[in-house]
Length: 341
Image 1 (cartoon, rainbow, N blue to C red):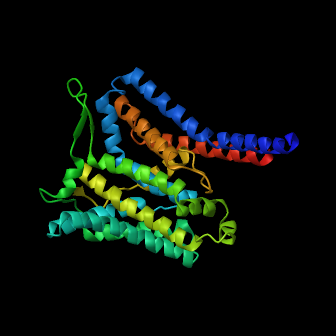
Image 2: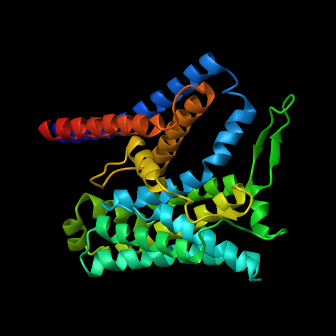
Image 3: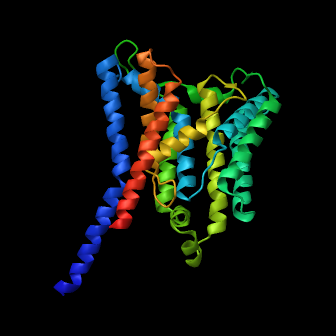
């Protein structure tokens, strides 16, 4: 009996070791995040104040929403380059609908539907026409950006009293001294709900487990009888719908103003956040909370550059690229080490 238990214990220990190794990129991201925040507090001050933290959370709520959708896509082994452009189109189209008299709540619902339609087209192209995810979503990016520019090349503003403006209402949670209040907005709460919903979807639903199976080994997933085709299409529908939702939150945050140039580069921010948070670019492994940590790493970088004032804002792209490269190399090193062991 003792001899039969020993292999099980060994396999359990090895499984825990592999899992702990896979957490290293996320733990490294957490260390980097707190290191940057502590440095910023020492160098510039007023970083850990309630007002600064709440402002950071509210301003990055749309990026968090995009990162949740991008996590699901990348875990499946895909990529979605269209999210930023879909945000722009959904924002412009939704605000223009409000301006011609369409009910504000219905317009916001249609913004999510617009995003889902772009995702549906991309998913069908990828699954049923064997188009590479990079090419399919790149085509959707150009299509969405072009349609947004056709609708309007000048900013359009939501009418006064539009319900979308309610999503930017400040709710004071902590009444601090002077202006040091901790406030949240409905838009931030929406982002929190999306994160919780994404976690539940990925870890507590059959479709979420299928997403992991597709990213790990699609052929095995098909042999197991999992609904690979339907799930892959839904992955991109969810990503597109979340892009439409991010458009709502962002449009509310900027006072109801929509522009065709909104969201340029946001897809790269979302991808960087997901990878920094520990999700494998090759698919099969990753989780939502790690991507949220990745978003805050990028937010901390921007906070430092803003507070410093002497650093050229263009360096943010270079620094983000360098951080992303380090985490990709870390993933590769861990994967190679796992293979050799």
